[in-house]
Image (cartoon, rainbow, N blue to C red):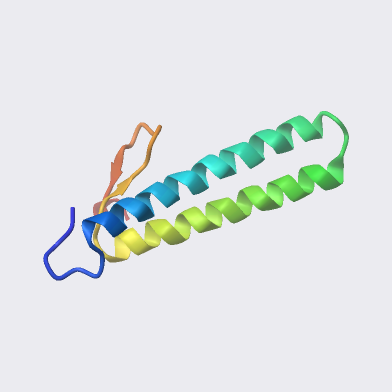
Length: 89
C-alpha cells in the first residue's frame, strides 16, 4: 500500500520488506547456531551468536518502524500474521 506523495515508492517498500525478512531469517539462524554451540560448552561463541541474534532483531525493528512511520504495510514471511499496519501499534 503506497500513498500518492509518500516518501517511498512501491519498489522501495518491497525492498524494505524483503530486507526486514532477511533480518528475521538471520536472527533465527544465529539463534539456532547459539543453541547448537551451547551443547558444545563453548560459552564465548554462544554469547557472540546471541549478540548477533539481538543485533539482527534491532535491524528488524528499525525497518519495521520505517514502514510504520510511513503508514505502510510490513509483509512478514512465514508468520501467522502476514500483514502488519500502523493499527497494530
